[in-house]
Image (tube, rainbow, N blue to C red):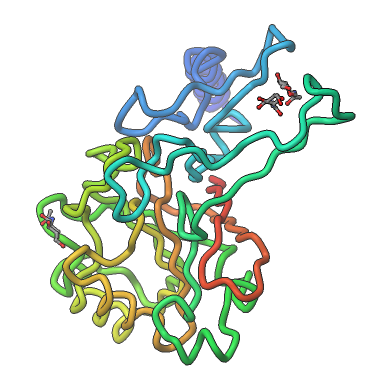
Length: 278
Ligand SMILES: *[C@@H]1O[C@H](CO)[C@@H](O)[C@H](O)[C@H]1NC(C)=O
Ligand SMILES: *[C@@H]1O[C@H](CO)[C@@H](O)[C@H](O)[C@H]1NC(C)=O
Ligand SMILES: *[C@@H]1O[C@H](CO)[C@@H](O)[C@H](O)[C@H]1NC(C)=O
């Protein structure tokens, strides 16, 4: 190594060290924040008060993102003007003399972040047992692309084509105007949500290898194309629909997605927990 090479190396090392120091320790890298800095709470590395439960949207310093909505009484419910309402209550409580607190909940299987099985829109598939328990966990877990779609349209064939999603991509999460409008944070069901039109759904089925379709409101299909949209997706019994994902603060890009529905034989829908890992 010549003297000038040595000096250059030292300079590079010092520059790198300065950059590293400048970006830490208060700002986790990669940043857990997306476009909207208010949408995700920062990860708390040092949880001081352990008498208060720690609730997080982002884990591991920006590595794991929870893209599941919390079930809330004021979360929207398909077709309802007033939201989900009471769904969880204590059946037995310590205060009333029971040995333990035991809660019970009751809700539609298509509540909050959830997935659809082929039996949701095909009666013959329902009767034949194509329920949540028949969904392929390999489809629900693996590399996934989060894409931003144009904000001025529903997801039409033209929009799908313009996204140029390469062949071989099997899991795509579509982030739409629904996230910007924070529709999942408003209790009144909003029919103007963005979803797939029937030609958009048909285009996806015929021209891509996508098997997991994720969107950010209660239905993947736009309100006006509710049945035809679902019918195109579910006909081949290969595509799994994951709805009402929480994509606030999530940047488009490549992640690993992990989705696990409740194992409910006989049900055509189920609550699902989904996370993205960087
Ligand atoms: C147990 O139930 C009581 C009400 O009887 C409630 O105040 C308390 O927070 C519950 N504890 C837990 C651990 O959920
Ligand atoms: C406890 O018992 C009272 C009186 O029966 C009842 O009104 C209340 O709802 C009960 N609470 C719980 C948490 O079980
Ligand atoms: C999407 O379609 C719905 C009807 O299904 C409509 O109300 C809404 O305005 C459309 N959104 C956009 C951005 O075009």
